[in-house]
Length: 244
Image (cartoon, helix red, strand yellow):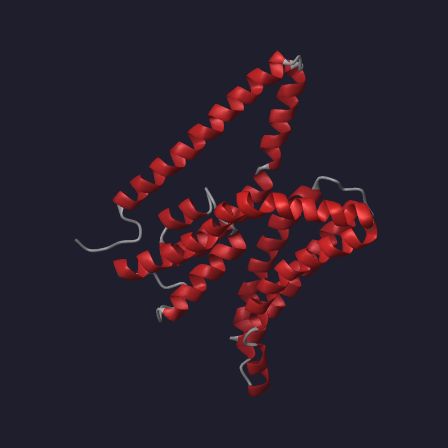
């Protein structure tokens, strides 16, 4: 049987897993709704919370959909659909898949034709992300206690420490953008593509922030991420045509 990244069997297995997760979500939603009524919360208030929460999920869903489409050219639809529907991160999944394909000698954007390469990419994407499942119950409580202790001692230092941790996380992804930047000096202009795409996304995010703060357009805050993501991807097309 010829291997295909979009084989019906893969679609079926992925659909079953996602249906299980959706069933769990519905189960806990119903339990939470019934419990809220038991403690005296009004139905109208609960309805408002459910509708607003559902609407706010549209924003991150757009960015996730873009990621699925971007990865589907190499990995097919089922695997990105699974990875970005259950436990996944758009930034992590794209980097993990891209690095693995590069090590396998497969060009990003070219569909995988062998089962071994597909399984390798799936394992790398999965094993890397599930580490958090084991570290969170073991370390999260201790880290929270430590940060709370620092906050009680010096609130300003606590804010600096928290921001430093966040910037450290962002720096890990910046390395992926700038890793080949030095080749620009030898005439490889294509190394500028990820840098310029990131710059465009950053500018769009800044504009969204200004619209929210200066012009009081509050709703744009919830859609700033997908807007900057889609804007950056759209800008990548002319930038790539320009720099090759």
